[in-house]
Image 1 (tube, rainbow, N blue to C red):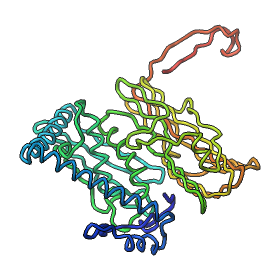
Image 2: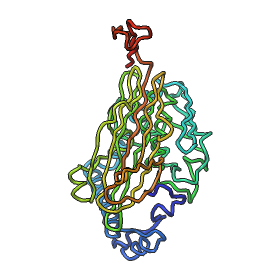
Image 3: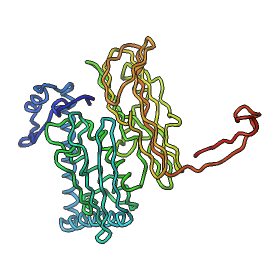
Image 4: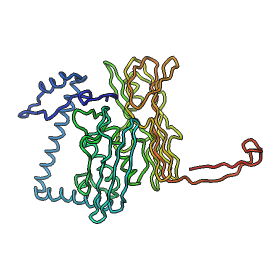
Length: 401
C-alpha cells in the first residue's frame, strides 16, 4: 500500500492471465519465479502461495456445491431460479429508481482532482444514466480507480436504495447505464497506479453519487489506510470515522463507512504481535457536521513505536472537508502527524511515508461525516451578571443541533 506510487508495477506483482493449475497440479515453480523476479519482489512467498491455493480451493468448493444442487433439482430448475433472482433484483432497483430525481455533483479531492457525475432518471422505463464525463483525467499518483471499482461503487449505491432483502447480483445493474470516459481517473489506462482507487477513490465515488441524488451527506470519504513495518514485521489497518447524515437519520460515530467493511485488530492482539503500544483510540468529539441531523464523529488513534520502523498513511479529506447537504454543515477534516519522542511535532499530508524511531507516536484523526438539513435553533436567555453581555444584563445564547 505505497502512498506515493506512480505505476502499478510499484504496487505489487501483476498476474495477467497466468496459469495457476496445469492438469490438476499447482504450478509452484512458475508462480514462485514470478513472485521473486519482480523489481519489487514478494516479501512472504509462502503466504502468497497459501492465499492462491485457498482461492483455488474456494472455487473447487463452489463448483462442487453447484453440481450438487443441479444433481438434486435438475439443470433447468436451477437456471430458472438463477434467472428469477436476477429478475427480482432488477425490478427492485427499478422501483427504487422511480423515486429518484435528476442530479449532478462535483466532488473535489485533496489533490486538486474532481469527480463529476450527472444522474439522469428516465421515469418511463425506470432506468438511470450515470455519466462521469467531466471527471479529471488519470493522475500520476495512485488515486486512479479501475473501471471495475467504479462500477462496483455505483452498484453499491443503488443497492443501498433498495429496501427489499435481495441477494446482490448482476440483475441490479440492468436498469443502470454507466458512462465513464476512457483515460479518466475512474477508467485509467495501464500502467497507471491504482492502489488507492479501491480504498480511497471508491469512497469518493459513493459520496459523489449520494450528493447528486440528495440522499446523504458525505461520510468520512476515506479508509485511512495505515501501514507500518520493517524487515520482520508488516501491518496494515483501515481506521473508522464518521458517517454522513441524511433525511431522517443522523450519522454514526466511529464506524467503517460504506465499502470499508473491515474490523480493527484487538488492542491486546496488536500489542502482543507487534512492537507497538496503542496509546489512544477514542471518539473525536465535535468532528461531525452540525445539522437538523448531525454527521457522525471521527476518531483519534495514536500508536507508539517500540522498534524502528517505516510507517505510511494513505488517506483523504485532510484539506477538503466531507460535505454537508441541504444546509447541513461539513464534517471536520482529518489530520495526520508524528509526535517525536523529543516532543517535536511533524504534521503530515494526506499521503506520507515516514521513519519511526523508538518512542515516536503516529497520530491519526479521522474525518467526521457531513450534517443534513439546517439545524433547529433554540433561543435561551441567561442572566450572566454582565460578564458576557455588552453593557451588562441578559445575554442571548444560540444553541444549534
